[in-house]
Image 1 (cartoon, rainbow, N blue to C red):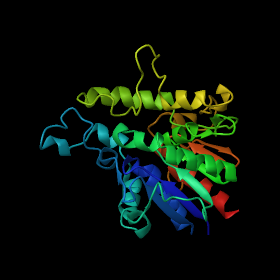
Image 2 (image 1 turned 135 degrees about the vertical axis):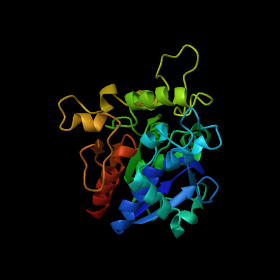
Image 3 (image 1 turned 30 degrees about the vertical axis):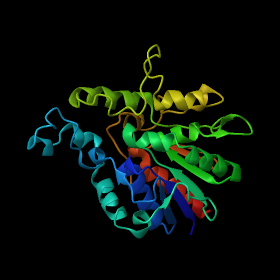
Length: 285
């Protein structure tokens, strides 16, 4: 049995990326430990759990409980069930704080994502977590990152080289195509909060997408070609790149994972079953 540390923000993390990873790892016999900013149980982005809040009528008292756009973007049934189980387990209910978190006794560090700025910025910008990531790479531990978790890794600068820990690595992350599609949709339907789906937005003079996850991660790499995405001609390319199909415990066709030795990365919640399964197998060898 291996031990996996999963740091998460106090709020607004993605329920699928955390809960499905927890479910896969614990079912395979691994020990999962959580760390939150303040050492209290975290809370996922409610919109990604319920789907409510993404429709034009979401501000209306009764109609707000009738999701439409949210049905496509929220966690699916398997992920919601996993989240409901996870929030009841002791390890999730009693995390350590980021200050108390240590890699001693851990075999892997898993960095999940989320996009809502109010919770995720504290996570991605955290000096404490960035140092933890640098330490994990320095120890040669397995590091697994998905979605905005890859951005946390990209911002983690090795003090000896002055470069990101991802410099010289192959990686994927939330692609600009996926991020832009969801952002364009939700900025119309959630017009009172048009940047809900963007954690960081461009400053005046910056080109469109400059602060996207893909762009920032790519700037941290040795070679832009080290950022990997689904290539034309790849088997099941449409399933992998449409943003409409998600993997399951028995169907990895929609997933896209980059395995770079002791570093594993994925793009979005639709990759999580496969992502966590590969991590679990690495830990078992």
